[in-house]
Image (tube, rainbow, N blue to C red; front, side, top):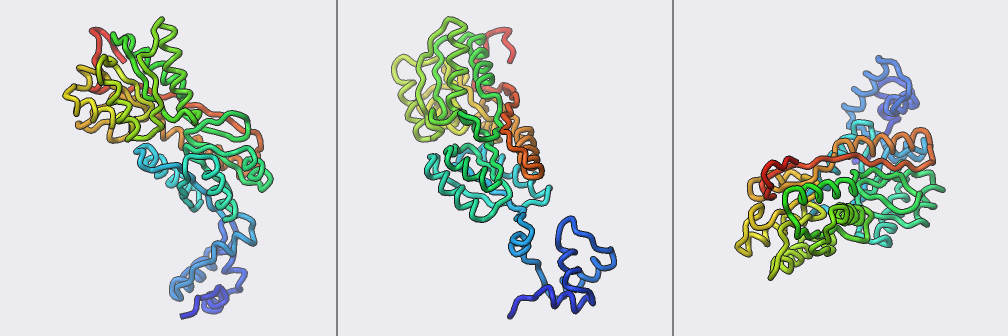
Length: 336
């Protein structure tokens, strides 16, 4: 069966082909009577407009590329759903790609996205090379990094205040009476992981304390589990600050497997406040990333750049908050 064309719709509706085009072009002008006739004819014939063909004519695809390194971290399905809903509400279609957490892998995926003539790109927790930044800029495709800062001034980015949040978590643990505090950090190849580790170190230093241990958990559940097993063998820390909730769940599992009780024998704090953190099985004290405000800021920033062509990168950090649950032992009189 051949595909229904706009000319067939025009004939059935008794209007010109250009009128059909206006009806299905966002922002174009057509009378209410014409819109009604065209849409009724289109429905009867089973016609759907060719969005890609229209994009070639208009130069606007109304497609946004979303790139994420991994989805097993529970933070990203939540963030991607919010980003998708927010962009769709603005009339944009979404292409979601996963990319390995390496610059070469990300560059390859985003280069492919640019070939789709997307109007903009959101890169969630991945880094991009300077040559690719130059190529995107030359192509007029704005890029915003979500939940990942990057050294240099090539890209706009939206993150939570990672360093400040990690400092506040660490000071909270110190004020709760902990002195042997370890940190299972996020991947130290990422600005996010480094900022949280630096905040941890700074808070300890200001209190005259040294870290019990700092190890790179790579934002990987299996690696974080192995780090936890090593930390709780022999002389163990009295608290572990973990670089995200995804790793913190593995740490809690290992503590329990060793016959210890989180919040009694060892305090554990995560970072993100994903939905599973509130489950009774984990009851994880964690630093809540303000994901709704981060998404709003990301979408606003990207659409501003698409609509105005504003070239200057913006760096936005949004403050989070500590969510107190049962995985931390509190000193008497200590509040979050």
